[in-house]
Image 1: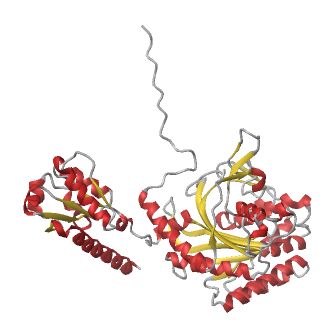
Image 2: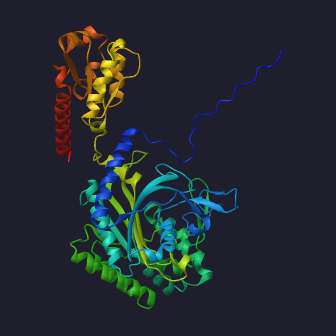
Image 3: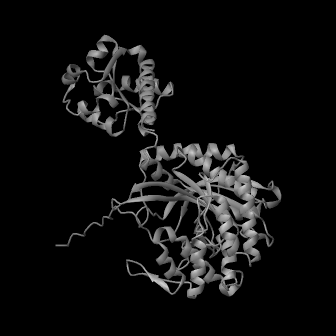
Length: 509
């Protein structure tokens, strides 16, 4: 007798660092994206969309995790020509390719915003995913640091439009040229090709200061560091004296922009590029002050360097200053949810001539997590459908007509498509976060009426209802109206629920 072959059944598993996103989160994210779009367009930026993957040589080597075999990106080889393509790791490198390809037709500066998924082939961790969404704004062709100052203002206004209050966030700025000046004063030529890797290692070490602390940064500036998992990260191999100079530079932070500028002046006094970076920060300070953006919204901090290598001047991060509980139930600061800076060399890779550019990006998933922690996400329940229940299977045509009436009036609605009874249908509507359900049983139909149940008010009591008779006796959070008034009554109840929810949100804030 032949042995029966075992049927292969794949496990329903996700790749590491990936996640599924449910409808309630998608709804809240879409609300956030609309608010960001509103702010970006208010500043005069226009939309652009680029493909999810690009030729690998167009993305360049400005990657966040170059220690990995495939340089931090997901890549594959095209079948036809043998060229390698990669999923985009940010939205800036594709923008540089687009500008270079369309340079003569574009206005200068070219001001664009874009939102979309990006992919990083990095080690995943808690809250750190390999696919996430960014929302960017960039000015290409603007040589003045007024463009950098404007993006800092845009960042602050965007976060406030999302619902963050002053005191919950800060846009924090620095200038890569100042750090190059400090390296130069320490005896390291930052522009020398043989020092490129060492400079990048220093940048990445400083970028980890808030997460790892000063001692860990010292190790990364020196021989290297072994983390808790046993993985070893090679350091920049600076001398103890050079490390001391960089640590001194990192300690020049202050609450006031003028104090930071004063503290940096002595550190870069002997470096031309350092003095140039300091002057640019002074100009930005003047513009921010003129625009009414004080240090409570935009401040300077020498520890901000950004991890990517393509930045050439002013850099910035959007930091959230409030505390929340992490996965270990510890109270910690929320941290960064975006940033950007000047990248004058990125478009030049294609054209061979300098094209000034600067940009700012918000991490949408991080912003969602921040608003969730603060209780400021819009309630998805307000966007849920009205569910028309099927009390009698032989009357589906009547129920379908009700659904079409509601849809014709612009009310999001659906017909229950299963064959279960009252209790199961109410449970279904509750799982769908339906605000209202519409019921027409035999009694209602005989009287020419319909019953509308408010699920927000009566969902708990509904769990105990077993049959139609019990429903009629309980009359849980329901309203009975003439069949002809279906649309008007649903609209009225939805408006009431919306007003109650808005008042609750106002009371919380």
